[in-house]
Amino acid sequence: MVFKVARVETTPIDGQKPGTSGLRKKVKVFKQPHYLQNFVQSTFNALGADKVRGATLVVSGDGRYYSKDAIQIIIKMAAANGVRRIWVGQNGLLSTPAVSAVIRERVGPDGSKANGAFILTASHNPGGPNEDFGIKYNMENGGPAPEGITDKIYSNTTTIKEYLVAEGLPDVDISTIGVTSFSGPEGQFDVDVFDSASDYVKLMKSIFDFQSIQKLLSSPKFTFCYDALHGVAGAYAKRIFVEELGAKESSLLNCVPKEDFGGGHPDPNLTYAKELVARMGLGKTNTEQEPPEFGAAADGDADRNMILGKRFFVTPSDSVAIIAANAVQAIPYFSGGLKGVARSMPTSAALDVVAKNLNLKFFEVPTGWKFFGNLMDAGMCSVCGEESFGTGSDHIREKDGIWAVLAWLSILAYKNKDNLGGGKLVSVEDIVRQHWSTYGRHYYTRYDYENVDAGGAKELMAYLVKLQSSLSEVNNIIKGIRSDVSKVVNADEFEYKDPVDGSISKHQGIRYLFEDGSRLVFRLSGTGSEGATIRLYIEQYEKDSSKTGRDSQEALAPLVDVALKLSKMKEFTGRSAPTVIT
Image 1 (cartoon, one colour):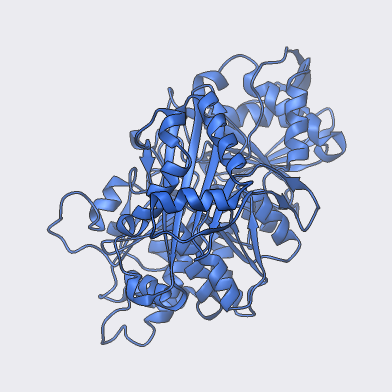
Image 2 (image 1 turned 45 degrees about the horizontal axis):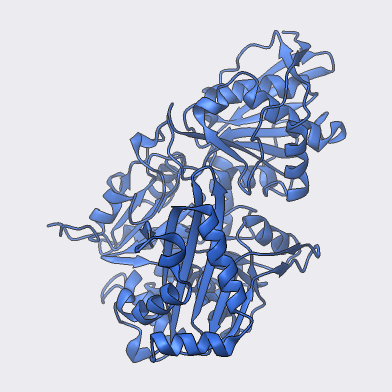
């Protein structure tokens, strides 16, 4: 088959500015003539001909609606732009962490290594003809394109005049494993369709002690449940949990990947993972059945995770702290010690306390996985996480949902290595409560006020910054609201100087830090077409181990009261309650 290169005239389309996770829009937007093509060509142009010609690129994603069409379009455009080979996960499926692993680890049949990837995902957003689609580009380190590249892509979308496409190149069968070769003006072009799971499974087996996890999972005392929410994690769950680790197939929920995620919202939290939440005994109604010991869920592209014990929810902030505290003992990959740990600024300070006690390097970074990636590339960070259900390590450059589940199973296996025969199982809840009694507990909640009038939201943030100029005034206001709240000792607008590349990120959120280790954080996110979202993070630190078992909302009530009155939330937004409480 010989193909020719055709140049197609086009004009710029507004709104193609990629965020931290690429470009996400409704499917009908992506289906407009030239829409996807303009963005892909702008990406090739941003990378430059020297990086694109002769390159090996991965093209796959979470399998959401429109992925199969998009893969064929990108293959034809890559061929026309001089790319040497395209790697596609079978049926177009690769989780975001697996793409990162494939870029970093896989060697092709001809000895080639990947230079980058187009990942087709809108993460935890719903899929289907009337829902969302997305595309992002990852670099040769396996991490998302840095701002320098995404700014260039966007700038190219505003001036684009033509894109290249291979004429006479048929659609490639991506359901069958194998290499298909074509020839074009610059010689051979290959499409290599490979097993979606093998490289990722191999990497996981090099990190964790699968034998000890298998012992745990085969114990009649230990029961397990994993919910892929019909996302791409389903392509890995059976291979890892059932075939490698011996879990029962009945312990997998919603593990068949679907283009519309079964009509659900593939976001692993207490609101959307309804079936798992009910099975774990955390639903509104009490189930007759005894819930499993351990449950977990993933989002659409499998980079997020939620961890549950029997009738017990583990907050993402606690999860990363507990993994860090136990990693060296429980996970072979970390047996030589941790290089450092990091969290995003809004995530609770539970990790800080672990870092201080274990004398580890610690970093607090803005929201966005690329900040962790820089630290990891420089050998400064081993384990990191964020409150929005993302946890990961330096084995790849994306957050990794299945890695987090295997980390928890490793900790459970380690804590139970001597009592799988007889004796009581150490449960998820036991591990968390034990952690609190050692390090103290960070009671934590997040209030989201969605679609607030953008003007009012900006005024509220400006008012909070102005208040910070006088802490004595702030403390007078607080004493007037609640006498049982500690005093503010520091208040600022968070900014981050990257210790690796020296770049500075400003206006990352407004912080009030209290004497007892508690915090209030206010962030404004996405002044989108629908108005703005104000996120308020409220965190009460409790060192006294006799008080770490209280109900979270009750422990936080005084600080919540202070946060809402200090910020004049109701006056500025007209809202008497948040849209969502996490």
